[in-house]
Image (tube, rainbow, N blue to C red; front, side, top):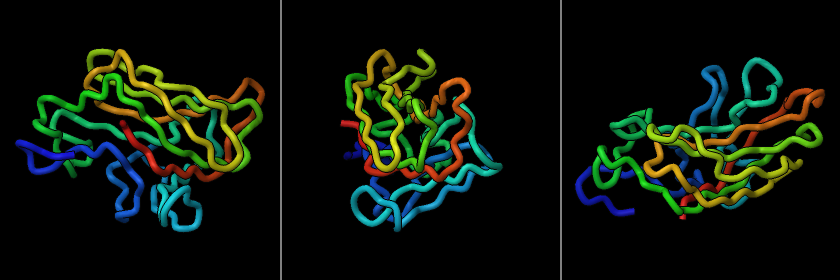
Amino acid sequence: MQCLTSSACIPDHWDFEDGAIHGFGNAPNDILRLSGTVVHGGSFSLEIQPNGGPVASGFDLFSQSYNLNGPSNGSAGDCPSTSDLVNREGKTLSGWINLTNPPAGSTVTIYAGSAQTGSVTVTTVPAANGWFSFSGVTTNVGNVRYFGATITIPAGGGTYNGLIHVDDLSWK
């Protein structure tokens, strides 16, 4: 991505090969780090360890948000200007998630959102043991302020008690 007026851009892909977490976040007490042992492609993935025990249905597996001045961590500005945010309308958001023995029947919902529309579902896929992919076209969201994934566990299905790995995310 080329920037015309700002010093940095919001990226359109994350493979974590540069050794950075890129402002991804989760619940305040979760531990985020790079993993070199559970990867989809390359040498690194983003590893999220829920802190405080198992997670229930509706838990955010990962998230990335941008305020009006760029990402919430302040590391990069928008391209070409911070007032434009990032128009991802009609773009495909795809990537890979790794879970260890998620409860049977669980699903993962990928979402994106803006100040104008709130959260919009991009796609929902079955949660699988090991690496599984997702891909969906972003519609009715316009200028993206945040995106992420949540896990939905069927009633009576228990909780998820494992690490979460994310790799090779992209908007195309």
